[in-house]
Image 1 (cartoon, rainbow, N blue to C red):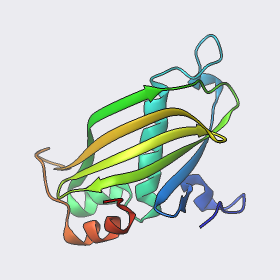
Image 2: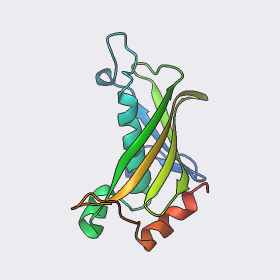
Image 3: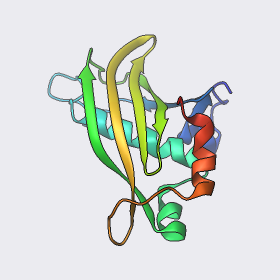
Length: 153
């Protein structure tokens, strides 16, 4: 599916390009440091938003997962490579791909793109936990079935 027409509500959740989810994010003043460059930690926030919208696009929003299934996705590990800066008013795209889907783990690869230039690459390991106990918990089969077509493995 290509980028949707402007003004539609689903624009806020991005779109899928094959198995890859794409989320556009505008860089605001609050995202930058004194030099007008995106503060390094804000790329983690951008990536978190993109992962949330990836799930929302599959009707797996975080609130519903907690309320209906007692399930949370939590970040266990992040590896970040900074290759270039984004600046005030840039429109970047966060490309998110699921490299691996395990029983209670998702390995994601995320790239912050400015046009064809990759600015930041992230490898994120997310685990599923019980909302009450925070102990690791396997994904329910029907949720796994929803995610499986988007896994690269």
